[in-house]
Amino acid sequence: MELKVHSYESMGTYDGPGLRLVVFLQGCPFKCLYCANPDTIPAEGGTVTHPEEILKMALSQKPFFGKKGGVTFSGGEPTVQAEALVPLVRELHENGINVCIDTNGGIWNRHVEELFSIADLTLLDVKQFNPARHLELTGRPNTQTLATAAWLEENQRPFWLRYVLVPGISDAEEDIRQLGEHFGKGRYRMIRRVEILPYHTLGKNKYDSLGLEYRLKDTPLNTKEQLERAKSLFDEYFDCAVLN
Image (tube, rainbow, N blue to C red; front, side, top):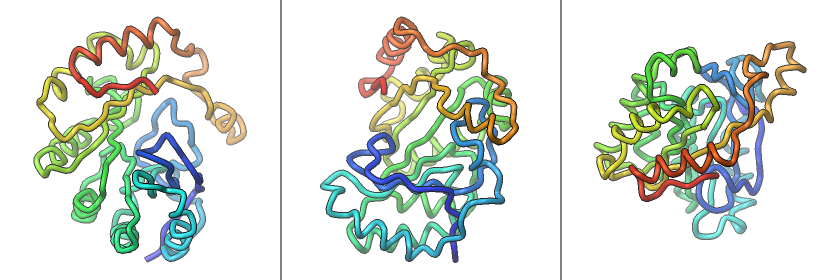
């Protein structure tokens, strides 16, 4: 079964531990207002790729991965193509390559469950804990994302919790505290790292080139004070929070 690949990044350092080959897959059910890669959202597009091509690419870069690195499947949303990913992940493991899945956790079926059960690490992007604001931000409810986190915890699958700090949208103290009360203070023992990601506008030019409206064009970048305040809030609930 083939995969639809949007692009690749070699020697990535932001999508999991160590140096990684990041494979950006095509298609995503979320339509996040700040999406840096809006061209990955439609199911159409991307390059039809045989999994063996990705395996060969990973093997050629394996000497650079070291003890911590490996391959990260991102997107888009990689679980859209979970059925095709499962056998590839198994092949990567057979060749001693670590695999991370960078996901919004919003899709669930038996293939997704199998994918999470064999991944070495899941990078779970929780866009907003407040249901109404999550719907406004992504166009989808956060019910399944939270259920996915619960499944990872119950099945002892390690994961990183990732949270983008968008001024006026996801940086309110109330929202951060609700997230902390749900996941923090030892409630989720499978969380290995909490990443606080500053808001950026790196994808704005893509919206312009695609003829799409960038709805957050008037949203400012985070100030140093906002970032420090958010980090201090996360630190009240987690001992593994980092500001990227």
